[in-house]
Length: 170
Image (cartoon, rainbow, N blue to C red; front, side, top):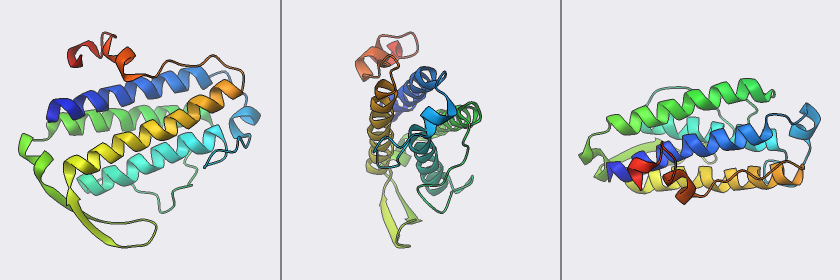
């Protein structure tokens, strides 16, 4: 099971880089334009992905910062947000790599952000949600980049698996 989640951690890093590369030359106005997505703009959506990752990593590890609101804007400038994203992606990869096999079948307990409930669940299903959530919102970011007239980045998992970084997981 560790190998499965190592693949998703590596894929997450790769796919995030592709989205940030595709958005790199957008203006501040384009990044902030309300595109009708759940978090409005591309910068709002990219911030949300990082916010949610930090919330989950705090739950998983007990370490790091966890914003109190899902729509928190951590960084309004894409280059600064990208640095934070890259650091979080490295943190995720390192944490998954360090987990013992038995951890994936274990449970953890956390407090929800939206309604302050205590939840206890197994780690593996929570990790499945964690990576699926990123993919969901990255898809929205992909659509916004395309709608803003930039080339669509290739984000399919199979394409990642055909890269040097992804080949060990294919």
